[in-house]
Amino acid sequence: MKRSLPALIALLSLVGGLAGAQEKKPAPQPHPTGYTDTPFLPGGKWRVHDDNRPRPDVVTPGKTSSEAPSDAIVLFDGSNLDEWVMDKDNAPADWIVKDGFMEVPSKGQGVGGYIRTKREFRDIQLHLEFATPEKVEGNSQGRGNSGVFFLGNFELQILDSYENKSYADGQASALYGYKPPLVNACRKPGEWQTYDIIFEAPKWDAEGNLLKKAYISVLQNGVLTQHRQAYLGATGHKSVANYNKVIESGPLKLQDHGNPTRFRNIWVRELDLDANN
Image (cartoon, rainbow, N blue to C red):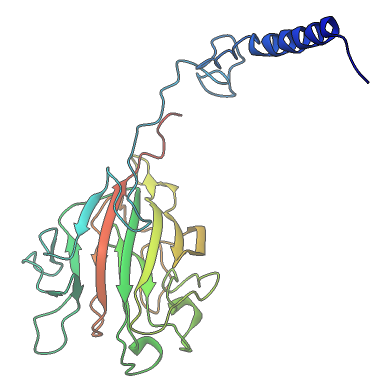
């Protein structure tokens, strides 16, 4: 169908007008940064979406999931044991350091014994990597046995649990002597494994009455093995743990159980779990 020149001009003008109308849409308004007229949250001083509530501190994460974030305390970077001492006498830690890892000394390689951090902690996030010996010697608790102790007393078990039948509450990721892991997430002997842990310290009142138990959450190799599990108390061997002693802060401790277990890339973040309440 043919259109006259005036009709075509009118049609083009109409299309142009519609395009212009679309371009003249009002700009979207920015969202408010917060509110001051919303209801108060139950039991607190802040409103819903409160504009005056402190924003979270900025933390720069590591480039990988294992690299320490900007606010972490690096306890071992593969170069030295400056952050550690021998647990028994406070002497400089004498574990072997080579090739970017530290290793529990075998007989003839050093004095040996537990090591602990010079610093003391309460609530923390801990990243730790370990490898049990590639050559399997022994069985059950004799394979790659070690442990990490929080506040120097609350143990999370380290063990070569790969195709290793040992008692359930002594497996890797167990709260030793009490709570087995949800699953066995162990890699093969000699392979590097990771623990990513949230530890909540116990709390007592001024009279020494327990107000809150110690709690731990654990990811082993990215797999949840403990979900905010309460400790029965300070860890023992062949005994039931208890809270008979007030322990609110303390060092991290690594166990020498006679097996040349290796560790690397250990860092910790101190937590304020009551922040912004």
